[in-house]
Length: 69
Image 1 (cartoon, rainbow, N blue to C red):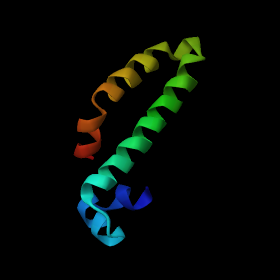
Image 2 (cartoon, rainbow, N blue to C red; image 1 turned 120 degrees about the vertical axis):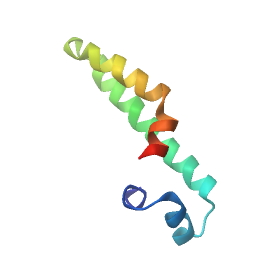
Image 3 (cartoon, rainbow, N blue to C red; image 1 turned 90 degrees about the vertical axis):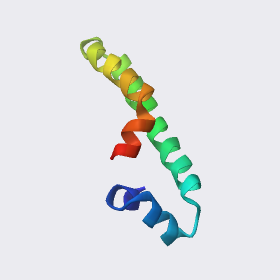
Image 4 (tube, rainbow, N blue to C red; image 1 turned 30 degrees about the vertical axis):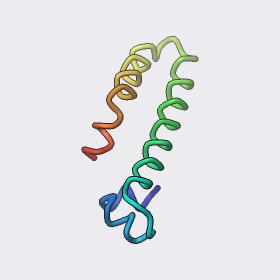
């Protein structure tokens, strides 16, 4: 996942010789996984309830956030 942080998805997909669509599916999978892990960690702590709402909003708009980055 680290090359995607540093380069555009198209460049990475060409370098890995896979389609851009396939790479986007991989990115979305790991972003979703990370968001679920963060929500699980936050939901166990009452002081972090406002953060839980923010993560829910981020999950709702994850596609737009990932593509803008």
